[in-house]
Image (cartoon, rainbow, N blue to C red; front, side, top):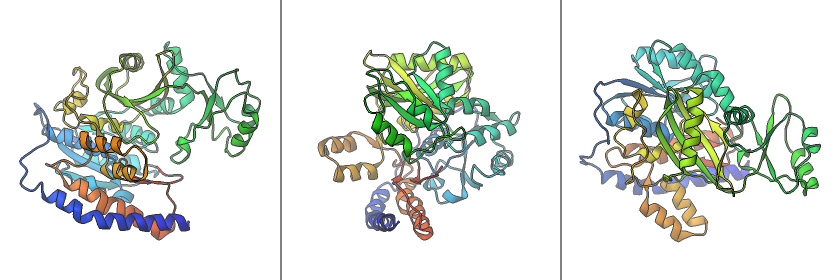
Length: 431
C-alpha cells in the first residue's frame, strides 16, 4: 500500500509539473479554423454514446459531430470528470449509476428517451457489455441500437463458447478446454511438444497479461502456477493451446451481418499503439463469422498468425476497440455506423498511427529502443489531441486522471497502471 501511495503522489506531482507545457500546447490552437473531418449527413440525428471515459468514445463523438450529428455522452458518476465531456464534439453530458447497479439500464434508457436519441452506440467496458445489451432491449422500437443482444454478448465473451462457435463454422481457433477444477489441470494429458496457457473467462483487468506457458515438460511449474489460481464452476478458466506467432487485433462495426467499419493492427501486451495492416485472411475470417451469425454491433477479435501462415482467433470482445482511433481522419465513419448497406471503410492510407503521448514519453524514458519511440512520436498522432478540439487532451492529464489518483489516494486503494487510453486506473476488481 505504501508503494502505491508513493506512486500516486509521484504521478500527481508529474502531472502538475507538466500542466504549464500542455497549457502552452493548447494555447497555440486558439483561433484554429480546422474542424472535425466528416461528410455532412443527409439527416441530423442525435447519437447517444456511453463509456465516456474512454478515448474510443471521444473518437466516435468526433466522427459523428464531423458529420453534423448531435452527440450525447454518458458515463458513471465515478468518472464524472472525464476529459471528454469538454470536447467540442459533445453537445450534452450525463452521469448514470455504475453498470453493476440494478438501475443502470433504465437510467441510460431514460436519458435516450429524454434526449430523443435516434441511435444508441455503446462504448462498453467488459463490465457493461451485458447491461448495455439490456439498455438495447429497453430501447427496442425507440431508437437504433448498434449492439448485440445479451445472449450473444455472453457467448462471445465466453472464450470456450466463442471457440466452439467459430469451430462449428469451419474457422481456425486454437485447441481449448473448459477448466472448472484444479484437478482437471493436474490430470490434463498435455500433448508432446505443445504449450498451453490459462485464461480466466471472467474479465481479469490485472492478471490478464499473465500468459505462463504450461506443458508436459514442466509438471512442477504447472502445479505451482495452478496452486495460485482460484478455479471453480463459478469461476471457470479456459486452457488454450499457445500458438506462437504475431498477434493482431481487429475492430469491426457490423450491421445485419455486414462489416461496414474494419481495422486491423498488430497487438502488444499493453495495446497503446495502432497502425493499420492489411491481413486479407483475418478480414475474411471476421466477415465469415459475423455474416453467419447475422450480427449488428461492434465486435473486436484477437488473432495469432501461426507458423503455418494462417490466423487463429483466440478471443472476441463484443465491444468497440481502441483501434477505432485509426479512423481519426476518415470522413465516412458516421455514415458507415448509421446506414444499412454502406460500403466497408478502412483507415485511410494517409492516417497516421495513433498513440498516447504520456505513455510514449514514459516508455522513452524507461525502456530501451529510444530511437524507435521517437520515430513513433514524430511519425504518429496523439489519439486525444487535435487542434480543433484541444481541451480533452489538457483535461485528461490535468483533471480526469488526477481526480482518479486523488480519489484512490484518499481511500488508500491500490493500482497497477494508469491507462490514459481507457481513462482509468487499472485496479483489481476494476471495470
